[in-house]
Length: 94
Image 1: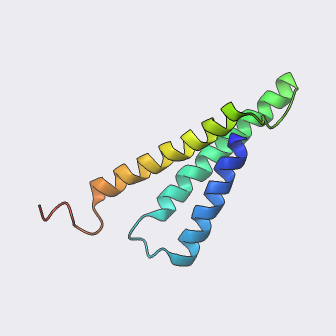
Image 2 (image 1 turned 90 degrees about the vertical axis):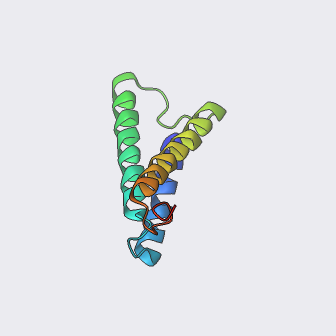
């Protein structure tokens, strides 16, 4: 389930980046973080399925919570980059 959640979040952020972003909020960075995580999870699921068999997509509450936590971690990393770069100059005024 975490693969589906990450891919959905990556697709949404990519669409917003393509349609609305002027580069100020670095949605391209968030998109790349989410797509990188999605590809990593896809490779992990595929290799696990090919080597061990079983189910490809785990549908459980734990897998759903893991997907949500991964999206939150990606958002935290993105926000840290925004705070460091301060695109609107709000922190430099203080």
